[in-house]
Image (cartoon, rainbow, N blue to C red; front, top):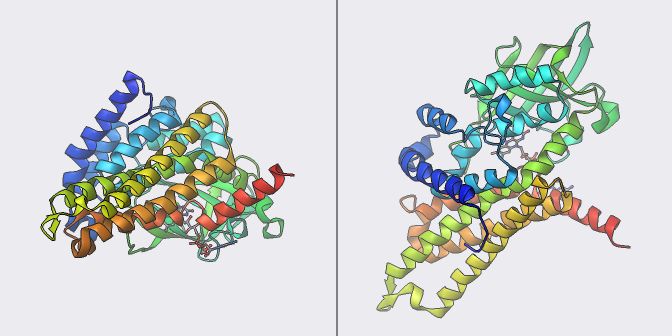
Length: 382
Ligand SMILES: Cc1cc2nc3c(=O)[nH]c(=O)nc-3n(C[C@H](O)[C@H](O)[C@H](O)COP(=O)(O)OP(=O)(O)OC[C@H]3O[C@@H](n4cnc5c(N)ncnc54)[C@H](O)[C@@H]3O)c2cc1C
């Protein structure tokens, strides 16, 4: 791969690839993937290896890796393991972010204790009536003495059914829009909090996705992260850093699809010769690689910039949008070149094709990313 890496970084990559091949791939079988049953034993191994919390500071139970190093590892775990399982087992990286950005030292230690013990943490912003328009959430937080009372329903909470602690966004005043949104940490066994239905998804089947119901949930005021009204900023600040990290998963799936397709077209024959000997097929494969390599370099560049302190929302959105559109195109062509077998579950590209679709939807749908890019262009270009 045409990228300069240090020996340590190559070591991180190799360890992650070996873990994915030896530990993840044999467990996430076709049957397990269809059932969606969470493999706790594998989760504990992932946790011991540090892969569930690699982005978190060491003092709170993480590996304290840079964004770029995390990206190198996540790419391997997704390409040779399972991207859905990685999402489900590393949800703490997303949910702990607002606490790290806006919490007190005591709050970080409190939340970090859950992480250190290998418990799962989840992030709950989206609601049934509010996804892309995240500022319009309806879950309320009403001050009552030293507590807040939370009421509402969250949906699509990754790992919500497995988590012991949640980062929950609620509004203290809906009329203020995003300026009313406030962030709380809430323990799983708090009275009034319950887990609702689990989604039966197209892909990412190894990540648990549920509704969360908040019925007069009493949360101590010292579990509020930052000030009232700061929650939206804390959540978005975190997303600006995590978006390129998420996009590398799309690159990994695309590369896995390419590798399977090249191997398959070398052995599958039509009209007396391997399919790959047709130049029309070679050009399709070359286009798949051009797009995937471009996506990889966008991700690496965005990660290195973030590590240098440059968080560029426009570049983050460009990276996310390009990679998620790209992975859909690449996996579609992979299924095409597998022919009828590509449409069947016994062949790997079928799963990759299903997993690919999510990237254009979550962490801000691609249309919303295009809005961000266009607004930034309008500001930037006079
Ligand atoms: C598997 C999975 C895991 C998730 N995990 C989490 C999680 O852990 N925590 C969490 O809080 N959320 C999570 N989400 C929610 C995710 O972030 C939302 O699904 C996403 O933001 C889109 O919101 P929505 O589904 O309500 O779509 P909607 O907002 O209803 O939008 C539907 C579609 O309409 C289009 N659209 C909407 N608005 C515009 C516009 N202004 N301009 C142009 N087009 C537009 C887009 O194509 C969009 O995809 C997850 C979702 C999934 C599917």
